[in-house]
Image 1 (spheres, one colour):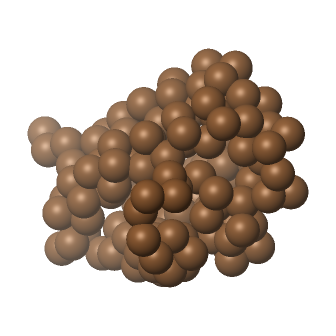
Image 2: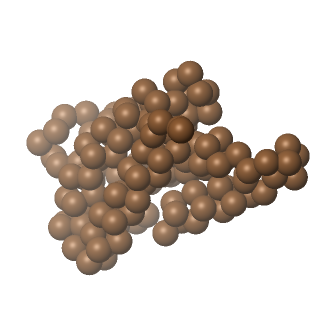
Length: 152
């Protein structure tokens, strides 16, 4: 839920500031700025909850903790690249691929009742997917709308 809150609050504040400062609503930049903030916010979780996030990756995959840290760094880089129109479209496509690739880890987390914050097996379980999968689809749609879609 925090992810969605960060995304929407930053978006609303950014479009408000753009209207006051420039006299127009800059939805494209505001949407990408909000996603940048959201990705940086989730990247912090890769450090704070590294143990729990490592548990999300099935044990047969090597270098799990390294993957957690690397994907956190990738999220920051993706977010920054969204702020530059020249790189926005390609970055958006890469982010969508990334979001699709990490979904199995979220499913693994839910099926195994993993709690990221406590690095334990006391999580919400499969019921978590009723929120997570629609959120993932929403985030993919957000990226498409603000970063990839051709403007008329």
